[in-house]
Image (cartoon, rainbow, N blue to C red; front, side, top):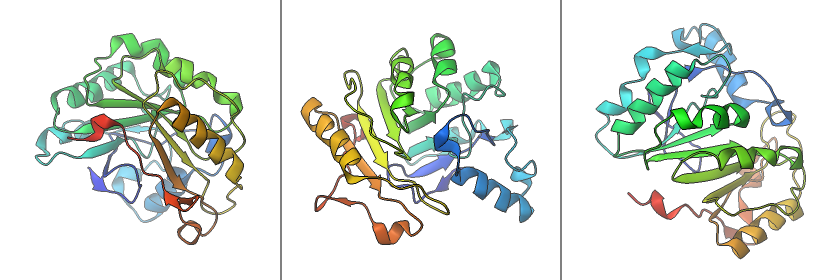
Length: 239
């Protein structure tokens, strides 16, 4: 089901798939894994398999019943492009988004290669935003994969930011989210890494959203960068 969320850059979450597996350094302290295991321990049926990839076909049609427009993070507890999610199921999820034009759907993946591989088989209506995670410079190649899609809004989630990205090509990107890691064992973020990305966004005219400094006590650390809350969104976010 869709649920309200405290994630700063969205409004609701929708999880027709739950569970995932680790593929890169950003996954090391996965918040979704911690939450899924906690919910499983509480006896929640949806998380009966813990953090193993689980399809929930009964939830695919839910967006059709939502009357009030909303911004929806798709699979906050999984990765839609995980290798264990069949293409046929991904197409069903896309079909639900295609006909729910009143909503904006935000998809985020670390599996950029599979995204690029099957992108031509998916219908990219304008209300589908597609993003990839880039946690350090080793994963900048994911941007090239993202640009092979026909998504109207293409964005990066640079969270957790684990190192400097250096200069990268922002052309063709519509939004950049940056954030530090939070929770137990959170790895540190450096202000100069964030400022470097922010400055490139300003120069390129790409909306910049600073989500958090993170840390063990993320609320205390806040999200102020140079005396300002950076919460810019793509123009198409206005609906």
